[in-house]
Length: 475
Image (cartoon, rainbow, N blue to C red; front, side):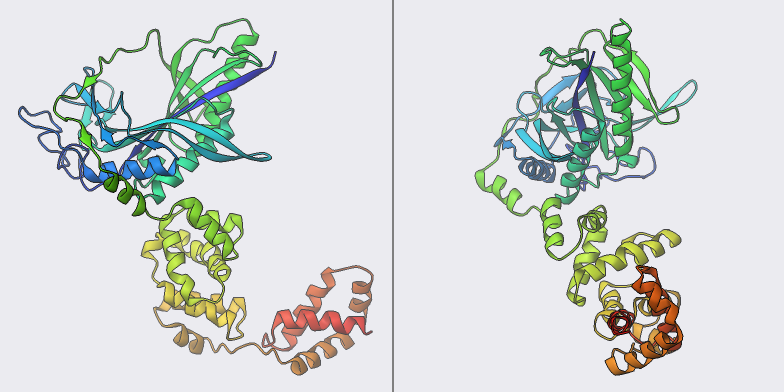
């Protein structure tokens, strides 16, 4: 029997606002435990929530990017439960009236693109971070009250690859709207998956299994594909799939049981009494949309129009700060693709070796552009420019000073000079001419090398290759 998977994702996005969702406490990562708190976060009597304006703006921008209908009235609800991760015993969220609903996003699938529906996006506050030890648990309330956007997809995802593509598309949107840094490894983007399978043709859903604690996009794919296979084995052997919450264990490459679910938890939602409905004017909503930074897909299309390959554009866009550096450097080069190549290869190699981020790179976009221009306009080879780049980084000098220190001169492109070197090399290598004419294309590289050696690297290799091919045809 063949089965099809029915998958939905719930993605929690931590917003990078200056303060928390309902209090004035600072919102920051990696601070000392319990130093980023205000009386409201600790449920002190008499404290009242105040809605974070920027968090609302961010949610509107994400909802618009996901093609959602935006609710112009904010309603908040109280989700009641007793647990230590929120001292007041309830969470303020949006249950009945989310800020956005009925959206979609497109993902890449074999043969084209697939539209995946999104049920809703709602705002809420995060819970505290718990550190579990053998016989006790420590609570860090720095995270309690941090603004969240929860994005809930429809069950329209079919496999792990689609799920990973979907999660990456959401990450790109929340990062480029300025809502979040989208770092799964730091918990600012967290993903829960719901997976069930059913025989092909069956309309009813199978038993849903929730998977938590997935900490990377790749692991989303691996966890879902493993769970599909696990549930298929159970059904084929005549067993039932239980409604469970499982976690992904990266070491074993398996989902592991956390707890068995029986009935849905009744959180006894009701309208939050301390936050009355807030009407958002049409101008407020439109201004949030109009002032939204350029989105990932728009940037990507613009980079492709500049001549970048799809893969190069995606590499640069994977880090918003790298994209910002690239954009700042474009005015200082003739060809944006040349700049992209240097960033992806030479600059990334240096950053990885030194363990620094692009925002800490010692060279300004203008200085890097000056080095690249040496290759584009001044007749320098790629190797010569890389040597200048490395010398500048090692000695903190200008590109001009590096060029002088390395005794680098522009390559000769004069056809008469190149022809003389080519003629001498061909005269000395008649067998190579015969091999090339017999179909051995690699010989051309050897001959180019011989010309470069004879000229001490002073001639333009592209012009050498062209001249060699022309002269070989004459012999």
